[in-house]
Amino acid sequence: MLGRLSCLSSALALATGVATPASAYMVYVSNEKDNTVTVVDSETMEVVQTIEVGQRPRGITISHDGKLIYLCASDDDTIEIIDTATNQIVGSLPSGPDPELFVLSPDGGTLYVANEDDNLVTVIDLDSKSVVAEIPVGVEPEGMGISPDGKAMVNTSETTNMAHFIDTATNEITHNVLVDSRPRFAEFKPDNSEVWVSAEIGGTVSVIDNESREIKQKISFEIPGLRSEAIQPVGVRITADGKKAYVALGPANRVAVVNTETYEVEKYVLVGQRVWQLAFTPDQKTIISTNGVSNDITFIDVATDEPVQSVTVGALPWGVVVSPQ
Amino acid sequence: MMSPLESDIRVSDNRGKRLGFGLGNYLICFYGIVFREALRFLNQRERFISSLVRPLLWLFVFAAGFRQVLGVSIIPPYKTYVLYEVYITPGLCGMILLFSGMQSSLSMVYDREMGSMRTLLVSPFPRWFLLVSKLLAGVAVSILQVYVFLAVAWFWGVKPPAIGYLFILPALFLAGVMLCSLGMLLSSLIKQLENFAGVMNFVIFPMYFASSALYPLWRIQEASPLLHKICLANPFTYAVELVRFALYGQVDWRSLVVVVGCSLLFLGGAIFAYDPSKGLLSRRRDGGGNS
Image (tube, rainbow over all chains, first blue to last red; front, side, top):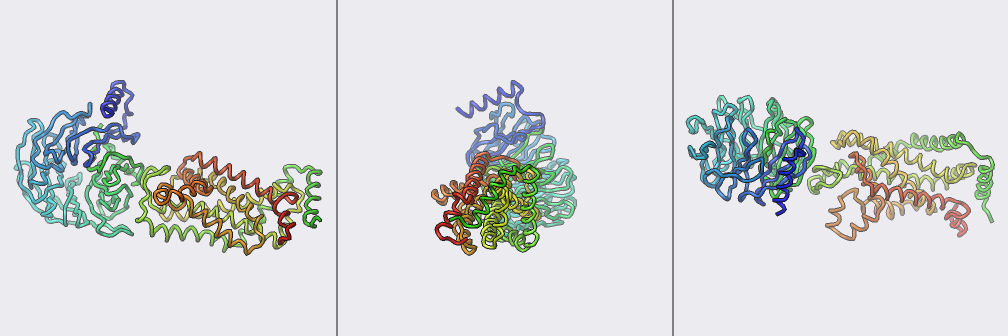
């Protein structure tokens, strides 16, 4: 009832035009444990609404026009579609079992989904809402990254410890690169030159050359006073200008800021507990981290790399995405 | 029977009233007291350095050891997670003010034993003015110490917003006045210099540890509700919280009210205690105490 009331009040606010200033973006956070998506205003840094969704929501992304949110409801074996105008679930996609993380193609027409339990990457055409291909990959696929030109896609498999390069034209694996233990996430550099793959147990980020498809650099992390086992890199994001990379370090409760030219860690930003995924605001002024154990998200100023504010969301926040407008 | 000191003071007090001093005269007197305190400060550099070493040790050693153990959750004025050393910095500012306030009380006892207090108190100016001047001189020195400490802390990674360094000044002043007044009140009760160790054990340490200087109050409440109540009754908690909020450009009104109230109470008490006709000083002397 309360949810409906808040939904109604935000709809009223939208209708009367007293909603948010132009520079405000909506931040959508998937809460793995309490089956909700929390909507946070990036300007006021306050929770606007909580949306009830399917079971165990994890991977979350948004259409390029900002109208639809795609959400992996892992335990419901489906991908839910949320209309951002009403914040209501308006449909679903056939994802295959246990979808965990996905990536949207640069043209916005295709969704590549990692099916953790089935060792598959499912390719979904968004226009027809149908599966167009299933690509067998390593054991426990998770991380998904796509090149800026959309020609190559990378999937990481947690147990096989590999980054699989997939040609999106043929939907076939072209290269397999062995990385450190339990790779979690893959992120292409905006200039298409490198792919950064985080390894949770290995505690490293492997930088793979996109030409040769070989590891050119391994970044490790060291935080005084912390055991190395506590440093578990997960989410990775690279700024649009390609100069800085942000790496979420899991139970180290820090986000590492890495210089992408020297591969040196410039700073460790203190955030909440078990930091998992990251997302930039479209203006690239802020990066937001989800902190699973402390049930909050932290806004980090990109210019100063200082944490600005932490906001409590639902239970076990996992993924985060920011509206493009 | 009136002691020679008291008769001197009575005469000078009456003379002061009769002469009706102007603002200029008061300023000269104030300047004299502050200048003496500044001289003492300059000549005792060890004291200055040692008063800095104490909080810095807490910052470098104690806080470093605890930074991973004590997860400090988000409590106002903090908007996000802070490292333990960031949390205890305002507490350590309070520590400087507390020790400095007590140190000035020690110097009052020392002055009394060495006879320089007689020189001060025979001045024709009102007693309250002399005590307040001495108190302000002590507060000024301790504020300087806090700023030097904050500068060192900045290089250690404790970087509050720039505006905080400005906002903290009135907070430090108020907290300093409260703690110095308390020291002054206590100094009237101490007979000998040696008794200062008692003040350390019975006043400074309990005040410091049973406050929000080292741990957030919610954490103390989790550990012991009784200790939490003691912390809430401790005026030093409010001094620390006033400084903490000010360092982040905010005002904690409850702390402000408590600190101002306690300052008036302690200062009034000190002026009363140092009044030769009715204060504790004369009462104790009548009882055959050391003078």
